[in-house]
Length: 421
Ligand SMILES: *[C@@H]1O[C@H](CO)[C@@H](O)[C@H](O)[C@H]1NC(C)=O
Ligand SMILES: *[C@@H]1O[C@H](CO)[C@@H](O)[C@H](O)[C@H]1NC(C)=O
Ligand SMILES: *[C@@H]1O[C@H](CO)[C@@H](O)[C@H](O)[C@H]1NC(C)=O
Image (cartoon, rainbow, N blue to C red; front, side, top):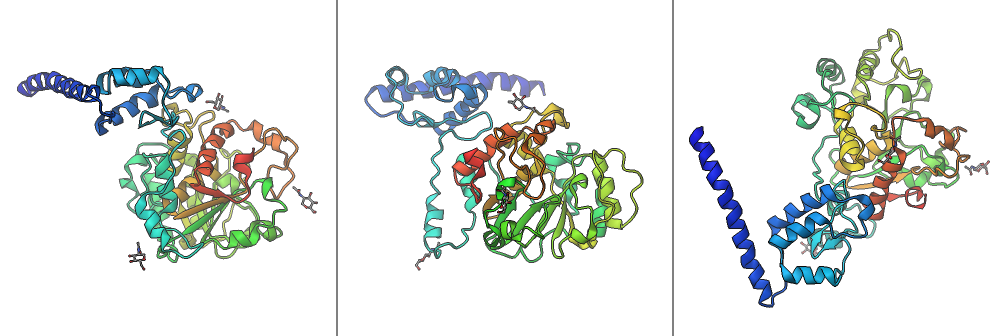
């Protein structure tokens, strides 16, 4: 042990010295008239420095302190400094070829071209065909940290999901393992039998926004392979605007449809937990047992879900965690639910789709905070102003995230509500 420590103490300064020598070697190169080129590894370091020090308000000036000072050591020395002072950085999203990121790790003004191999692959597809891997490729282009694999639902191996096993609901399932086991023993199904076999899946997330009204988008929505609806958003009576098919209905107890006859026939009931009590509710629903008491819920909840256990799934809580902490940048609050750190179910569903669909569209998203009298939902008369009372969400921060997705064409917004408001 001691020897190893000593060795490390010697090795570290040597590495640092070696690095400086190597860099100054490069420096001389540039002085002799060559265009600066940045070493890959240094780029990564710089990104880290900038992403922590970049203040969103100084976005217009991607020349960040950290980048400059580190740049002096590793970069092109005098040549770099001269160019900084003469302000010759052509592309505001890069700092002399280095990408610049916002706090969440999204590229500022990204180059959203698809990788050549996908351009080649898509070139062979007929017009309008589903493009395999499209949403994930676009997402990676604006958010290089994106890693696609994340299963839609929990299965019997859920304990191995490292990213969620140490968080309490809603960001993980810690303390709920046994009850989840008992639920999954009943449901026995953990995927989407017919859809998992498709080589290319197109998904549409239908939000509940009043913006869906009178746009006659129903037939367009019905064309998607996977139609995702949220909570109690109705279909009957609104099919012209919202479509008639429902593949998945994602819901939490307070949002679930209460009248059994209002459940559509073929949809999968996808449960999303926001608090530990929610799992107890789901167990009763799966077992078709009575609820003992409903204190702890913030409004009345469904007491019966007319679904066979095989038609029930548990949404992977990773999507709540990733949406909150990585994509939107809501307060971590030590991993606990707190003021303004819960993403809305719509954004959670979009996050799920980015991982599990090849193309992603949304409809019925976007609130206009400046129009307090516009309808909040397409199916009721609650006004916009009602949402201001919500302490759990941060709609404006969430909108920033959705705008990045729409701007870069990661998702298609069928109702154009995300960019216009
Ligand atoms: C595209 O089509 C060409 C000609 O038909 C074929 O040679 C090529 O392999 C195809 N590329 C892909 C990615 O399928
Ligand atoms: C939609 O159209 C109906 C009938 O024309 C009208 O009564 C209603 O106010 C419209 N809704 C919205 C949100 O514009
Ligand atoms: C939403 O986020 C902004 C910026 O971080 C913050 O100023 C605001 O207080 C947050 N709102 C809520 C409801 O937490």
